Image 1 (cartoon, protein in one colour):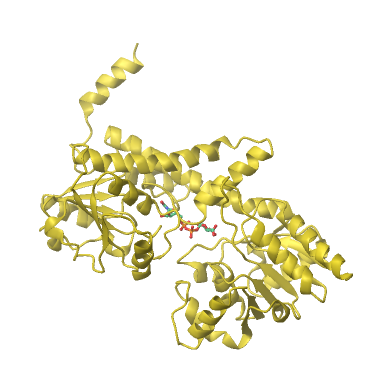
Image 2 (cartoon, rainbow, N blue to C red):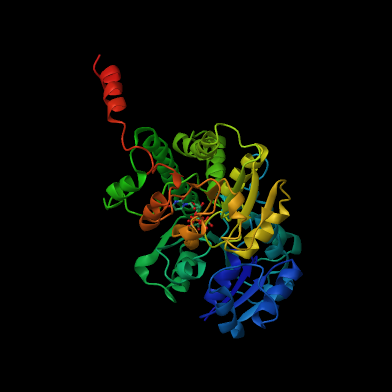
Length: 466
Ligand code: UGA
């Protein structure tokens, strides 16, 4: 059993603490006392947590005897074997990761630490940040005239919102880096408490930092690839879902993260692709593939918006649209970089009136805080004044959108569904068709009169046979 301190009680720090406390004594430090109070209240069953993560509160309660929450630095850093930094690295106005919170955490460690320990950065950062952290700690130690043996490494996090607890329990891999071999061994042993050696991927520090950007950028690029392909599918009457299956079964490609839609969102993919692109540029390396993925992610929202607009002959003024799903993905209240919110803003600017529903109540609360004009929220999926609705726009892949109760939708004055995530399942699609609905999606336009053979043949003759 080790003494672990986690700096930062956010989306990464809090679930990680809850999970590790199954085996270690974990102290969580956050300078915001409100957060500390809130999480303590949650553990005592007094209030809701400020993070909505499946299984998190239960884990916190189960492991409460090995968890300490504090906003006192001295208490947090009294006796740690390992200190993990898990603070935010939001994009700054140049699209680069803002390292000021990481640097602050490092200085804070240097100010109060009184023993040798290993410091590990978990925040998503540009390569080299661990060296910066080391320097900040040593600067503070020097000021105090103290000298401790503090090795600094990195251990990027790969959990996703909504599945964080499951990802922590059964990770595909644990990537960690440290240039000091003894510290790397100590980290290996720390992770061996819970995970099989085959899951551990020790490496040099900068490689581990870059691995995180590489993973998110590859997934984002893969999605941009599929999203672009869906636009081509729309053009020629192909079905992107069939292509997903057709390529996903190739083990070299794999099935995951192939689902096309009107763009990827969330607090990570957009931020991290931008950050690595900037890092590449500043390092003199043009990351053309990633830059293209970023551009494609903007274009694909526009494509979906134009598809909706064209359906109403280019005029959205006075149209009433129901928006199903505003969280950046299903099951989250997080609206950061939500493509759905981006789309809502465009629809609203173009004159549409919007009735917004999401199965996660906090997502609606957060949406209301955006203060957008011509938008009202609604707490029930089928209570969106449907008889006045000209179309439903699906903005995320929540379960209840996949197989909607069509009998409740037939009152709509214009029977159209725009499925930005291609999530409505096959039997429901048949029901829609039978009930006279128009269904438009991203690369799966089942109402299109099949493939326009004649058009394709003329095109091939003209462009490919001269
Ligand atoms: C992502 C990564 O998946 C995690 O591994 C990583 O740890 C995390 O970022 C992070 O850096 O902290 P997250 O942002 O929570 O996790 O969400 P994802 O589930 O990856 O989804 C991102 C976006 O891709 C969503 O908008 C989702 O709808 C979209 N997506 C995902 C698709 O459009 N199609 C797919 O097939 C999969």
